[in-house]
Image (cartoon, rainbow, N blue to C red; front, top):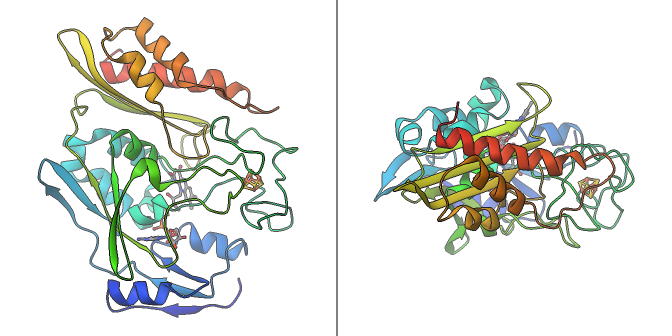
Length: 326
Ligand SMILES: Cc1cc2nc3c(=O)[nH]c(=O)nc-3n(C[C@H](O)[C@H](O)[C@H](O)COP(=O)(O)OP(=O)(O)OC[C@H]3O[C@@H](n4cnc5c(N)ncnc54)[C@H](O)[C@@H]3O)c2cc1C
Ligand code: SF4
């Protein structure tokens, strides 16, 4: 690990000021950052610890909910408001990592976790995300875990988060604070596509602190499901995941949400699948049509072509479970 300065700011204002310096990085639970520092994939010159800041409340806000950026993943997953009103979020969080990691990991850190692309995590090989302009080792490498949606010729890495897939399906808004301003960023605009600059992964500026996430009232609590397909039951990232919600009235789907994980370069919402569901009866046939509509212009590579079919099957299964199929 390269040397760094440790800063424990008194409050959010001091944290933002300290993290505004080039090379500085916020530290929350450390489960991504410290790991990557040990590998010398990330080498911040200063760590600005924000884990102790009073930003961990989970509380009702109007018809919705507000979740502090320092709330631990385990606390969010088991909070009564989340379990009752946003079971999709609870399910997605519990599908991630392990209880020990969830006890440390924060909402802010989860939003900003880095890809698990093995080439990104190996400083000995080229990677445009880690070292811009060096090339992408995955393009001619082993691509089983890589993305089929949202890719570019510069990067095909998947976004690793389970939580963020649920947040996309739930229309979350990420609230941030920097120098003199507060921002509210819709989750769909928070993460960016790799394009020519895979090193840019989100809409944040240097020193901009995520303070909390807000979820609006959700009509999907009764019929929502997160399904994650992975190689083993713990400590495995998604090969494909689907977060879905159905709002059904008089035998027809009034509104739907379909978001995908494990197959795209950012948490992926499929408006095409949602449109295919609206107005239809909740049935296997309508779920299959929606799944077919969800995968638009995929770019599979040698080892991950199976994800096209797997993603569709995962959507169908999630919709069936959300609707109550055995
Ligand atoms: C063994 C293992 C298995 C895992 N499995 C899964 C899994 O299956 N699914 C899954 O989704 N995740 C998984 N994870 C990832 C885990 O969810 C993340 O590491 C965790 O959520 C990161 O949160 P943290 O608080 O520890 O962040 P940190 O490591 O402290 O920070 C991560 C990044 O976020 C930035 N940051 C943190 N807080 C803020 C803030 N408030 N504002 C601005 N920037 C901020 C930091 O600067 C850093 O760049 C796994 C991790 C491990 C170690
Ligand atoms: S896929 Fe992205 S993260 Fe992986 S090696 Fe290529 S540029 Fe790096």
